[in-house]
Length: 149
Image (cartoon, rainbow, N blue to C red):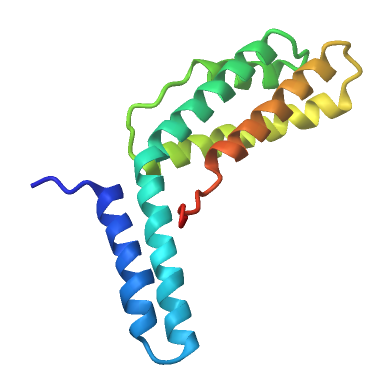
């Protein structure tokens, strides 16, 4: 048997919210059961989408770095951006994707520092592209809430 993690977690959520929580004495215990149930629901959703969200985010960062490598004047940053743009993931494990994303996020910070200091005419457009990416990334990672209606 291969458990369908989102289905299992949603069933646990329902049990915690509708059966276990109300059966517990005291508002603290019931509230804790409800929060645990909600976290189970969110964990199921993250299991389903987690790798996809991370892979898409990493790919977009690499694309931004590829564009930026052709524009920046700082030789060390240009090389770092080029290397980051050419990289690839060898694992779809969440921990490995998070590690890769963390490294790319540090490179993004370096790029943003450079963009804020430069007077180049192309910098504003690249900054806007980064802001759009960050907004899209935040939206993709937003945790869902169950439809209780």
